[in-house]
Amino acid sequence: MRWRALRLALFVATALSMPASIAQPADGIPKIGYLLARGPDPNIDNAFFNGLRDLGYVEGKNIIIERRFAQGVFERLPQLVAELVDLKVKVIVAAPFPAARAANEATRTVPIVMLTGGDPVAAGLVASLARPGGNLTGVSNQGADIMPKMLELLHEMVPAAARIAILVNPENPMHDPFRKELEAAAQKLRISLVYLEASNAGDFGPAVAEAVRRGAAGLIVPQDPVFFNQRARLIDLAAHHRLSMMAPFREFTTGGGLTSYGRDLSEGFQRMAAYVDKILKGAKPGDLPIEQPTQFQLVINLKTAKTLGLTLSSAVLVRANEVIR
Image (cartoon, rainbow, N blue to C red; front, top):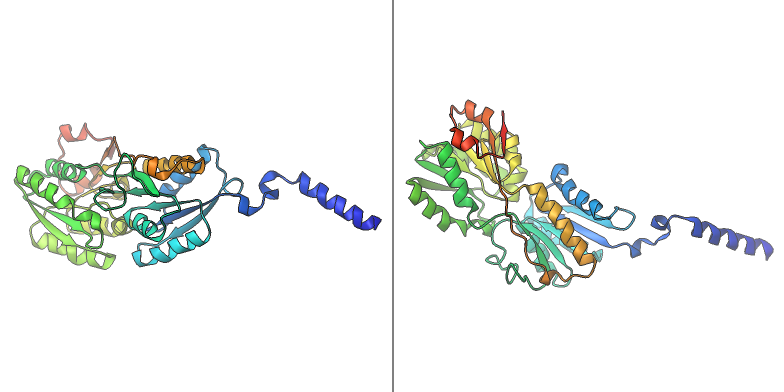
């Protein structure tokens, strides 16, 4: 009996001396679901993880992050969301639109923090930007007039271009609404547009070749996880066909594209961490306004411009936030 009592005492003493992060059962640590329609991208994903760390969250100590990546295969998203719901996560972080839509269709109770381009109201994800309602809130990466602005900037860099191609993913409902705005902008600039559909990497080659065949001198790539995942392929095709490419994110331009205009993607991911923090502290997602971008980055790759034989005006270069030489 004395030996049994001694063992019990030793067990209790050992348990009490363990750090809280180890002694605390895993079920007591909130789980966050991290759902991406694309594949892993440490340079961007770490902006979210570092954002959580800056707010006092240490993975494995006071938070657990369950990561799921669809690798650009949208059909996988429902199953990945189901896995996160089964794990009883406290919040699902979903980006971009296909992931947010899949999460929204899978649960009306688990809070969702999204990052998406386009208009989430028009897409039916939220009731309004000011008061989303339901269980979804987050960050929008795209202002209302960003696509016409991209067209205007590209035209200013390539004024001789009478025709510009627009890459469209028919499986992305965020791509339809901007056509009307683009047409109005194109009419004002006295240029014509060519719309080319591509839903996977295999479509890119024929689409870009068709753009060239139809006389396009420029190519605009809108926000889309497939396009982002396969940006290296798009950059190579644009270079091969000597197309001046405008994209929404800096990562296209640092990779060799001509120019990009849009929100800093890393900043958007970092802002999602603030939403997660508020929800874990008791805020209701439906009461948290959707954050819209207020600052956009114009990045120009001057090396690519020279390769394309373009001479960019000082008026364009002086407006750039970053010039890659």
